[in-house]
Image (cartoon, rainbow, N blue to C red; front, side):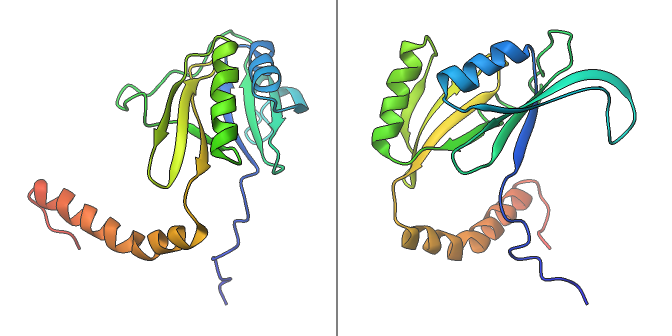
Amino acid sequence: MPIPLSGVVRSLHHFAWRCRDAEQTRHFYEDILGMPLVHLVRNDHVPSTGEYCPYVHIFFEMADGSYIAFFDLGDDTAAEPSPNTPAWVNHIALRVDSPEQLRQMKTHLQEQGVEVLGVTDHHIIESLYFFDPNGIRLELTTPTVSQAVMQEHAIQAHALLHEWNREKHSARGGAIQ
């Protein structure tokens, strides 16, 4: 008998990305964003593949117990953005508790010399955007509507996706299944 999938995936444990320099990344996430460095793995071989690749894997903890993590492969190279994707598409969105905190973080980031875009009103959240030292786009965001409004959006989500798919396929001369 198959297990029910709804609710099996509980939360984000960590998101991992390559970084150019572990100390530069530590400074940004710990000293500027306030996310403590809580774990470091140093290894010469990748545990899952056995491949030789010396690295340091560093973990920064968020208030909810989830992490953002980075791999420093020791070659001072950052991950390159995808050449077929606009720079604004791939990003990590981190939640703060209130619009006031969002604005406080904007001021703090700017005082630290970080270029910030926003505050942007997305009608269900407000966000600001900036890049970390590795060129990774980050978003700080906070909800601006009630859980009831979000539940209404959830009810409509499948129908809206179906409409998007229909229009996309129609524009390409195809039909949606």
